[in-house]
Length: 398
Image 1 (cartoon, rainbow, N blue to C red):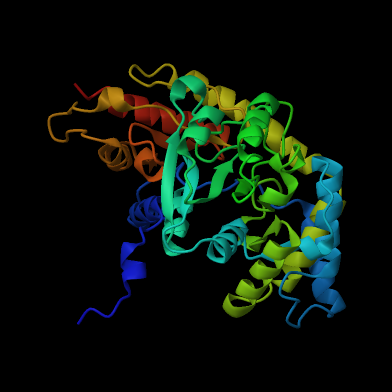
Image 2: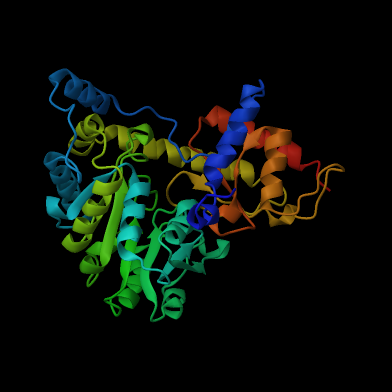
């Protein structure tokens, strides 16, 4: 008897998590797999953040349920950070802390989207965007950037995609999976289009803000006319290497923040109390570790680009943020080693996993079926070895 809801049956499994699971299965068999599939920093959470969590435990005051939208002192620290770094003026009432930026996105979509509402998504996109839109019973409308433009869809494409049913727009900058960073000029063009449509809300995913090699991070909400239309989404997992601490947040107009607070109160309630105390230390403390991580990612980016460009058939570009490269591998489609034929990016990833023992993620999951995502959040030694294996394995395809 089939008792599962249509909702869950329509939902795709996260491709990044699925590939990580396949890699773990091979590792459990004693195979030396290098995982470049998950978007997870390989650095430890900075020491002063760890110490703040230990202190919170020792004080013994943070063992009760926290407020649903987060402790007032954390929301104030977030407001201070947004003013300091992003030139945005928010009150704590406008901020909701959640169990990761993913929940922040889910909360927002579930509060905004009615069945049949359209949500324009800049593609390539993070795997969960489209699935969360579907969960909210909305309809994703995809606008795509090309590798020639560093995968950045344009303001003109956005303008052409807007219809009377458009309720929201979603993008990330720096972008997962491409590492693309929208320039101030590009963001201003996007803002000009959207500010003419006051009934459209923008979900601006800025989770990779601190891993930016372009020299400037531009928050859409800070541009003329966009403050009341924008939900800024951010968190602690990438810039502070706090993936397991599970903390993200939104900064939004009060009516949206109140709605998300209401939604979260019925689903998970407040985020982990000790993690929240650590997050205060992250925002108010020394940023040296965060800056050092960004410098390391830049060195790795340059290393990975150099090595990938030595592989015939691999088409690359230069990502200006995050810790991913998203090469076009369509040159390998139709090729075979005599046993396996590569028909698409899924086949490519499975071939590389099974033969080179390196895990990547198919670009199909990100809206770009001709590409694969490679994370360079790994040691330089692992990156060198992984790309050496990939090069050797791909050389067998004819």
